Every structure is written in C-alpha cells, then in structure tokens.
Length: 328
Image (cartoon, rainbow, N blue to C red; front, side, top):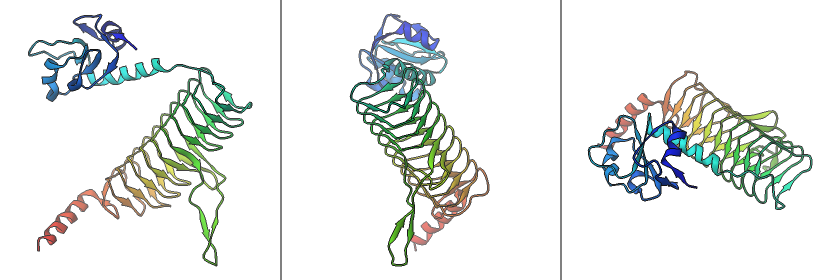
C-alpha cells in the first residue's frame, strides 16, 4: 500500500515541508530509515538520525527547527508520537479486507454475523452465536455455541472461545488465547483421588479490552468470570474461575490470579506477579514484578512489593537490611 506525504498530512491534519508527492509504503524506526519508509522523530536523543536517515517521509513536531539539511520530506504535526499511533491505526483499518466467509469455514446456520464481518480460513462458529459489525475473525479460530461478540473486535489466529462467552465491543483477543475453558476445580475424595467439579458458568469480557497471546481465562462453576471494560492482560497470563478484574486494570506477562479473587479498578500488576484466591484488592493498587498478594488489600492507591507483598517503601527498607546482613 502506497501513500504520499500530502495524503498522510491530510489524514493527520499536518503540513508538508518538502515534496508533497514523496511516497512511503511501510514504517521504520528513524535509525533504520530507507527509501520508501515513513519514520518519526519525537525524542531529542535521536536527532542525529534526522540528518542521516534515508527514509522518504518523516513525522516531526511543529516546533522542530533543523540544525542541518534534512533529506526526507517532513510532515509537521502537533505531536509526532501521537500522530504515528493515529496513522498506524488508519493504515491498519485500510488494510482490512472484508469478506463474509469461504467454503473452508464451518459456520452454524443459526449463527448471526453482522455487517462487514471478516472471517478467515478454517474458522468454526457454533450454534446461536452472534458476531457484531466489522469484527475480524482470523484463521483457525474456534467459537462455541451461544457466544456473543460485539462490534469492531479482532480475534487473532488460533484463539478458542468456549460456549456462553460474552465479549464487548472493540475487544482484541491475540493468538492462541483460551477464553472460557474449565477452571481448576477438583474435590479431594476419601481415598485420596480427585473428583472433577463441573463448570457451568461463563466468561464476560467488557469493551475495549485486550487479551494477550496464550492467555487463559477460565469460566466459573456458577455465574461468571468477569473482565471489566478497558482492561489490559498481557501474554501468558492465567485468570482463574470466578475472578473479577476491574475496569482499566493492566497485568503484565505471566501474571496469575487464583479463583474468586476480586481485583479493583485501575490496578497495575507487574510481570510474574500473583494473587491467591478469595481475596479483595482495592482500586489503584500497584503490584511490582515477581510479587505476590496473599491477603486482602483494603487501602486504595498502594504500591506493593515482595512475597508476601508489603508496602514498597517498607520492602525497600527490609531489602537494605538484607544486604547489610549479607556483608557480615
């Protein structure tokens, strides 16, 4: 796909400084710029590349004043970093080609697909499932029965969505994630064996949520596992049965949350952090990487570290003592 500087400036409401017919077909970092690429400059430490880059088009801030000759055509915008994000989104939407489905899909007759839904190869969609307008379902996705998927969602290759799952609008499920499989529920028997506890609930995911690759969200035995609007869950995370994740909470890779934990709004969990089951965590809690919460967090806005997690400033003082004792 080819764009001219003038076309991009019109999209970004910017101005062209140079050749308005300069063309770009792809994006690159400014230090890797070559003919046919579009780059951006926002961080002053990369200014040296402005004068050496071979890219065709360069996004810069309106207030940028070159100290030497600039080869690429510049598009001046209010904020180059934000403009790049807007441009990536614009190009992504243009690249999507809509199709109903091909013969290599298996879509139940009772399933209902909205307007301009894109369905890849080898997709299975179960009975009485509904998919909203402009949603994109990539290759090898399996969607069970009675699933409800909103509009403008993206479901990447290999994702599995189990029966009864509800997904809001503009939600993204990355490759290989599993939504709505059985939770880890087993009852110990007198002879030491385990009896499986059947899970008959579902998973409810809000709007504007993003779920990373190979992340698993288990359905509840009864009622629902709930992921609130705007949540961000990274790759390789586990959300167990009956968990509730509040709005706009973010979890980095390999975070694990045990069953029936209730996590507040606007929380941030670092990578490889963990939460035991049946606890409540207050809004705006930050849990640093490799830390673990083993009890209720009742005070909002705390930063916690360590295992078991304690206030970060207390943990720093304790760590200093550990280092001192190690010198003896």
